[in-house]
Image (cartoon, rainbow over all chains, first blue to last red):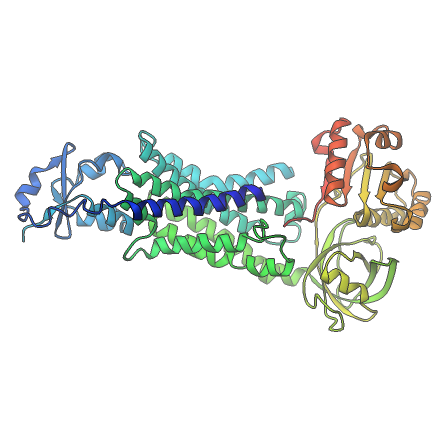
Amino acid sequence: MKKLCYSAFIAFWASIATLVAVQVLATDGADGASRAETAPITLEELASHNSEQDCWIAVEGKVYDITTYVPKHPVPPAILLAWCGKEATEGMRTKGYGRDHSPAAWEMLDAYFAGSLAE
Amino acid sequence: MTTHRAHLLLWLLALAPALVALWCLPPGAFATISSALNALGRLTGIAGLGLFLVAAISCVRMIGFDRWFGGLTSLWQSHHLLGAWSFLLLLAHPLLLALANVELSLNSAVTLLFPSHGGAAIWAGWGALVLMMIFLAPSFAFFGKPDYQKWKKIHGLSGIAAVLAIAHTLWLARTIAEPWDSIIWLTLIAAALASLAYSLIFARRASQFAYAVNAVHHPANNVVELSLAPEGRALSYAPGQFVYLSHFDRNLSAGYGEEHPYTLSSSPSEKDLRITIKDLGDASRAIQQITTGAKVRVCGPYGAFFPQHSKDRELWIAGGIGITPFLGRARHLAATGTGVDIQLIYCIQDEARALFADELQGLAQAIPGFTLSLHYYYQHGSLDADFLRYHCADMARRQIYICGPKPLITLARELSLTAGVPHKKLHSEEFDLL
């Protein structure tokens, strides 16, 4: 058991170091956020993306195209689909029972940025 | 309840949150590689904390409670295993969650581990994990064999690690639906706090006894037998149990006020307690010089080496200082005049190291059905099947009790199993918990 724990301890830090090193060395920093300068998205346009095949949500003034993420989200798709085409800040902030999503989840959301919501 | 079932119950309690979480996972949680990694990442985190909290519950020294688990050393073996598995699961937890995010992007995998802004809950998780590495490093001898007192202090960091791990979990948990998530964790936290409070407030007071050294006897030049007279109420115990002894003699070179476990070698019918201590470390070396009148504190009794009631035939295998629980039991048998069918095989290097040999010979004469065989390593070599067969032909039908250095315990267990002794009839007392 002592050897197993020691091996796991070393393997853990080796894996973390590898992951961080690969991320630092990768130079594809240009993804996401490229549509920031496009025209604001209106509530009408947002409302038209309201299906499993085309799901946009608005959170705190920004619109995200989460179509590809819906099947990966940990809760059943029906819970997310209810927010497609809508203002979903409440869903992000409360998860339905008063708990905010993790900072990691918020940062993941940035990758799906589609544009700003029109005032 | 058998001791086996008690241990099983402990593991079930530890795994309960993970089992509920497994049941709460949405359908398709294992459909793709990344969703399976995410689900496993969450399950390892939940299971790891469950095991951690039950390890905390099982580390308390509750008088009497340890007997359900076959003694304190046996309970602590479960504590040790729970801690080790908790550590392994919690190491896997962040890695699995990060790997699950690689499918989205490498950035999101690293951001999940190291959020660039905010993320107090994630950093609380990191704090708990790094503290766990620090307080478990001596337990698993990551950097060599630890010093007992230093280990004890470092192990105290586990309390802070638990608080950080709980904060991290309650903040981020989403697998188990509310209110069950809060109910499960708050129940386990309450149980851990209750056992801690019980051991610190009630059990500590109930299990501490003031004694003074009444006589000092040296059966060998590196072994001391202390006779301790009660200063107030006296300890009540069973033969073969052990206590934590602390001395308050500033003249001794080490161990002032420190707790060290020693087996009682006296009969519970004696007025004084007798404790035999071999020089095996700084504190046990220092205590060889203790003089009469010195104040000590005894905390206990713990352990359940011998059953409370037994009419079975027994074979005792002792090695070196491991004779102490048997000496205590034999002295008690002689004092109570009980007839038995017990064979003692006492393994030592040579005649000069046979502690209490004369007294044991006398006890063998005095106790009906108690026989003694001495095994000298220099003369007979390692203990082997022939020696056991010659001195105890019917060992397969006896309860076997083994106490001594770890290599002897391992050897005697192997020889007994080969001779047809079933696992449940093998009992050994191991103090090497680190």
